[in-house]
Length: 145
Image (tube, rainbow, N blue to C red; front, side):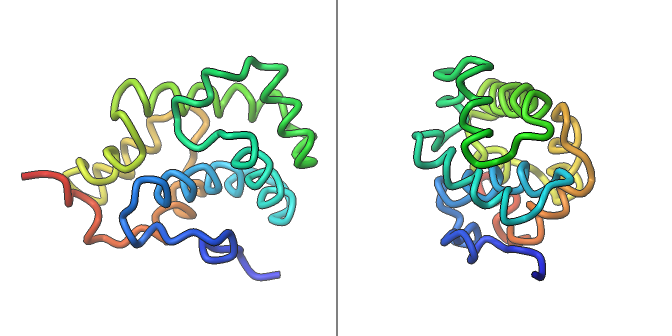
């Protein structure tokens, strides 16, 4: 199967809507790891179904609770690594930016957004590449001014 994209998950991050940008960000975190794309997509659906619809919602799940959701999606091989990464990334996004939408729309440039994303613990170039391929340049910095 070719690389899954936002449309495969019913998402439209190009719309600029906060829920759509967040959904694609979460999916990108899952797709950026060495797991099958179908497993990442299934796990994304499980997380959304259980109400993990914004960075702040991750506070409601402890390590074991979030790990159980990853296991439900069969994202089991690196579940503790991913659990810790998701908690850390989402807490940092909420604390420093408020939301994924604010992170994107308040970046001064694609380079600044890339650097901000890479600064998040556990996010590497592949995850950034996956996320940014669905985010139009016009959205980056659109909240500034």
